[in-house]
Amino acid sequence: MRPHVIVNTAMSADGKLSTRERRQVKISGVQDFNRVDRLKAGSDAVMVGIGTVLADDPSLTVKADECRNNRIKRGVDEHPVRIVVDSHARIPSDAKVLHKGPGKRIIAVSEQADEKKVAQLRTLATVIIAGDERVNLVQLMDALGTLGIRRVMVEGGGTLIAGLIADDLVDEIYTFVGNIIIGGKDAPTLADGEGFIREAEFCQLTLLESRKIEQGVLLHWNVEH
Image (cartoon, rainbow, N blue to C red; front, side, top):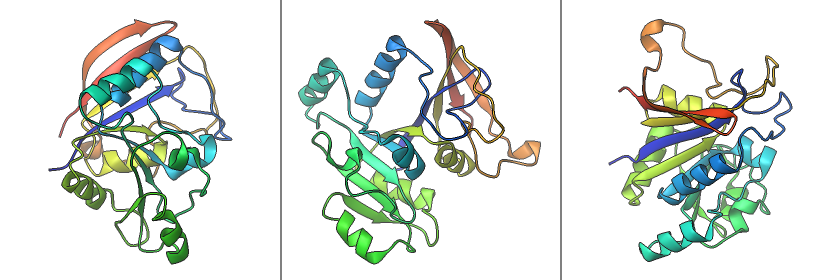
Protein backbone atom coordinates (compact mmCIF):
# COMPACT_ATOMS: atom_id res chain seq x y z
CA MET A 1 0.00 0.00 0.00
CA ARG A 2 1.39 3.39 -1.00
CA PRO A 3 1.57 6.11 1.66
CA HIS A 4 -0.96 8.89 2.04
CA VAL A 5 0.89 11.96 0.75
CA ILE A 6 0.37 15.46 2.13
CA VAL A 7 2.06 18.44 0.49
CA ASN A 8 2.64 21.46 2.71
CA THR A 9 3.95 24.76 1.38
CA ALA A 10 4.07 28.46 2.19
CA MET A 11 3.85 30.80 -0.78
CA SER A 12 3.67 34.51 -1.45
CA ALA A 13 0.46 36.14 -2.63
CA ASP A 14 1.73 35.70 -6.19
CA GLY A 15 2.42 31.99 -5.69
CA LYS A 16 6.20 31.99 -5.23
CA LEU A 17 7.96 29.68 -2.75
CA SER A 18 11.18 31.73 -2.68
CA THR A 19 13.16 34.20 -4.79
CA ARG A 20 14.49 33.50 -8.26
CA GLU A 21 17.85 32.80 -6.58
CA ARG A 22 16.15 30.06 -4.51
CA ARG A 23 16.87 32.10 -1.38
CA GLN A 24 14.66 31.12 1.54
CA VAL A 25 12.09 33.76 2.49
CA LYS A 26 10.06 34.02 5.68
CA ILE A 27 6.47 33.89 4.47
CA SER A 28 4.49 32.68 7.49
CA GLY A 29 4.79 33.31 11.22
CA VAL A 30 4.89 31.47 14.52
CA GLN A 31 1.32 30.16 14.39
CA ASP A 32 1.85 28.53 11.03
CA PHE A 33 5.28 27.20 12.02
CA ASN A 34 3.60 25.47 14.97
CA ARG A 35 0.90 24.03 12.69
CA VAL A 36 3.56 22.65 10.36
CA ASP A 37 5.45 21.15 13.29
CA ARG A 38 2.31 19.33 14.45
CA LEU A 39 1.63 18.10 10.91
CA LYS A 40 5.19 16.83 10.67
CA ALA A 41 4.99 15.14 14.06
CA GLY A 42 1.84 13.33 12.95
CA SER A 43 3.52 11.91 9.85
CA ASP A 44 5.60 8.77 9.45
CA ALA A 45 8.03 10.55 7.14
CA VAL A 46 8.87 13.98 5.78
CA MET A 47 10.20 14.32 2.22
CA VAL A 48 12.04 16.98 0.26
CA GLY A 49 13.87 17.17 -3.04
CA ILE A 50 17.60 17.68 -3.35
CA GLY A 51 17.10 21.28 -4.47
CA THR A 52 15.60 22.14 -1.10
CA VAL A 53 18.52 20.50 0.70
CA LEU A 54 21.11 22.36 -1.37
CA ALA A 55 19.32 25.71 -1.01
CA ASP A 56 18.18 25.60 2.63
CA ASP A 57 20.06 22.74 4.36
CA PRO A 58 17.01 21.82 6.50
CA SER A 59 17.16 19.29 9.33
CA LEU A 60 13.49 18.24 8.86
CA THR A 61 13.24 17.59 12.59
CA VAL A 62 10.24 18.12 14.86
CA LYS A 63 10.94 21.28 16.83
CA ALA A 64 8.48 21.33 19.76
CA ASP A 65 9.24 19.23 22.86
CA GLU A 66 5.55 18.41 23.23
CA CYS A 67 5.31 17.06 19.70
CA ARG A 68 8.45 14.95 20.10
CA ASN A 69 7.24 13.60 23.45
CA ASN A 70 3.88 12.67 21.95
CA ARG A 71 5.64 10.69 19.25
CA ILE A 72 7.71 8.85 21.86
CA LYS A 73 4.53 8.04 23.80
CA ARG A 74 3.12 6.52 20.60
CA GLY A 75 6.15 4.23 20.47
CA VAL A 76 7.82 5.82 17.44
CA ASP A 77 11.04 7.79 16.97
CA GLU A 78 10.90 11.40 18.11
CA HIS A 79 11.43 12.52 14.51
CA PRO A 80 9.73 11.09 11.41
CA VAL A 81 11.81 9.32 8.79
CA ARG A 82 13.57 11.95 6.72
CA ILE A 83 13.56 11.31 2.98
CA VAL A 84 15.53 13.13 0.29
CA VAL A 85 14.78 12.55 -3.39
CA ASP A 86 18.22 12.94 -4.99
CA SER A 87 18.47 11.32 -8.41
CA HIS A 88 22.24 11.79 -8.82
CA ALA A 89 23.35 11.57 -5.16
CA ARG A 90 24.35 15.21 -4.91
CA ILE A 91 23.57 15.58 -1.21
CA PRO A 92 26.59 16.82 0.79
CA SER A 93 27.82 14.30 3.35
CA ASP A 94 27.60 16.99 6.05
CA ALA A 95 23.98 18.00 5.28
CA LYS A 96 21.97 18.62 8.45
CA VAL A 97 19.29 16.17 7.38
CA LEU A 98 21.85 13.36 7.62
CA HIS A 99 23.11 14.23 11.08
CA LYS A 100 20.85 16.46 13.18
CA GLY A 101 18.56 14.61 15.57
CA PRO A 102 18.08 10.86 16.02
CA GLY A 103 16.00 8.75 13.68
CA LYS A 104 16.00 7.13 10.26
CA ARG A 105 17.00 8.68 6.95
CA ILE A 106 16.28 7.55 3.41
CA ILE A 107 17.99 8.84 0.27
CA ALA A 108 16.26 7.97 -2.99
CA VAL A 109 18.56 7.86 -6.02
CA SER A 110 18.45 6.67 -9.61
CA GLU A 111 20.53 4.04 -11.34
CA GLN A 112 22.70 6.86 -12.72
CA ALA A 113 23.93 7.94 -9.27
CA ASP A 114 27.66 7.59 -8.68
CA GLU A 115 28.36 4.22 -7.06
CA LYS A 116 31.05 5.57 -4.72
CA LYS A 117 28.78 8.34 -3.48
CA VAL A 118 25.94 5.84 -2.99
CA ALA A 119 28.27 3.59 -0.98
CA GLN A 120 29.20 6.56 1.20
CA LEU A 121 25.55 7.48 1.70
CA ARG A 122 24.76 3.93 2.83
CA THR A 123 26.88 4.60 5.93
CA LEU A 124 24.58 7.50 6.83
CA ALA A 125 21.15 6.46 5.56
CA THR A 126 19.09 3.80 3.83
CA VAL A 127 19.48 4.19 0.08
CA ILE A 128 16.60 3.29 -2.24
CA ILE A 129 17.44 2.98 -5.94
CA ALA A 130 14.37 3.62 -8.09
CA GLY A 131 14.39 4.60 -11.75
CA ASP A 132 17.02 4.90 -14.45
CA GLU A 133 18.06 8.54 -14.99
CA ARG A 134 15.66 10.10 -12.48
CA VAL A 135 14.00 8.75 -9.35
CA ASN A 136 10.80 6.95 -10.31
CA LEU A 137 8.40 8.37 -7.75
CA VAL A 138 5.83 5.59 -8.15
CA GLN A 139 8.49 2.96 -7.42
CA LEU A 140 9.73 5.03 -4.50
CA MET A 141 6.27 5.28 -2.94
CA ASP A 142 5.75 1.56 -3.39
CA ALA A 143 9.07 0.93 -1.63
CA LEU A 144 8.12 3.25 1.22
CA GLY A 145 4.85 1.39 1.60
CA THR A 146 6.68 -1.90 2.00
CA LEU A 147 8.71 -0.27 4.79
CA GLY A 148 5.51 0.46 6.70
CA ILE A 149 5.44 4.19 5.98
CA ARG A 150 1.78 5.15 5.73
CA ARG A 151 1.78 8.96 5.89
CA VAL A 152 4.32 11.19 4.14
CA MET A 153 4.52 14.97 4.46
CA VAL A 154 6.23 16.68 1.51
CA GLU A 155 7.83 20.07 2.17
CA GLY A 156 9.23 20.85 -1.28
CA GLY A 157 10.42 21.86 -3.64
CA GLY A 158 8.41 22.70 -6.69
CA THR A 159 10.01 20.13 -8.99
CA LEU A 160 9.38 17.24 -6.59
CA ILE A 161 5.82 18.36 -5.90
CA ALA A 162 5.12 18.70 -9.62
CA GLY A 163 6.41 15.18 -10.19
CA LEU A 164 4.26 13.74 -7.42
CA ILE A 165 1.18 15.52 -8.77
CA ALA A 166 1.91 14.36 -12.32
CA ASP A 167 2.13 10.77 -11.09
CA ASP A 168 -1.15 11.14 -9.14
CA LEU A 169 0.58 10.46 -5.83
CA VAL A 170 -0.63 13.47 -3.80
CA ASP A 171 -3.72 13.19 -1.59
CA GLU A 172 -3.85 16.51 0.30
CA ILE A 173 -2.31 19.95 -0.10
CA TYR A 174 -1.90 22.66 2.54
CA THR A 175 -0.92 26.08 1.19
CA PHE A 176 -0.28 29.03 3.44
CA VAL A 177 -0.57 32.19 1.32
CA GLY A 178 1.38 35.05 2.87
CA ASN A 179 0.93 38.81 2.55
CA ILE A 180 3.97 39.51 0.37
CA ILE A 181 4.70 39.56 -3.35
CA ILE A 182 8.07 38.13 -4.43
CA GLY A 183 7.75 38.24 -8.22
CA GLY A 184 10.07 36.89 -10.88
CA LYS A 185 9.21 34.55 -13.73
CA ASP A 186 12.02 32.22 -12.63
CA ALA A 187 11.06 32.10 -8.95
CA PRO A 188 9.90 28.61 -7.89
CA THR A 189 6.21 27.86 -7.52
CA LEU A 190 4.30 25.03 -5.85
CA ALA A 191 4.36 22.91 -9.01
CA ASP A 192 7.28 23.60 -11.33
CA GLY A 193 8.46 21.15 -13.98
CA GLU A 194 6.95 20.96 -17.46
CA GLY A 195 3.36 21.56 -16.43
CA PHE A 196 0.19 20.23 -18.01
CA ILE A 197 -0.99 21.24 -21.48
CA ARG A 198 -4.57 20.01 -21.80
CA GLU A 199 -7.32 20.86 -19.33
CA ALA A 200 -8.17 17.17 -19.03
CA GLU A 201 -4.73 16.67 -17.47
CA PHE A 202 -5.10 19.38 -14.83
CA CYS A 203 -4.97 18.29 -11.21
CA GLN A 204 -8.43 18.84 -9.73
CA LEU A 205 -8.80 19.97 -6.12
CA THR A 206 -11.63 20.23 -3.60
CA LEU A 207 -11.31 22.95 -0.97
CA LEU A 208 -11.76 21.42 2.49
CA GLU A 209 -10.98 24.47 4.63
CA SER A 210 -9.79 28.07 4.46
CA ARG A 211 -8.87 30.12 7.51
CA LYS A 212 -6.99 33.27 8.33
CA ILE A 213 -3.71 32.78 10.20
CA GLU A 214 -1.87 35.92 11.23
CA GLN A 215 -1.61 38.07 8.08
CA GLY A 216 -2.20 35.24 5.62
CA VAL A 217 -4.65 32.48 4.79
CA LEU A 218 -4.32 28.71 5.02
CA LEU A 219 -5.97 26.66 2.28
CA HIS A 220 -6.49 22.93 2.76
CA TRP A 221 -7.21 21.01 -0.43
CA ASN A 222 -8.17 17.42 -1.21
CA VAL A 223 -6.74 16.07 -4.46
CA GLU A 224 -9.27 14.34 -6.69
CA HIS A 225 -8.04 11.02 -8.11
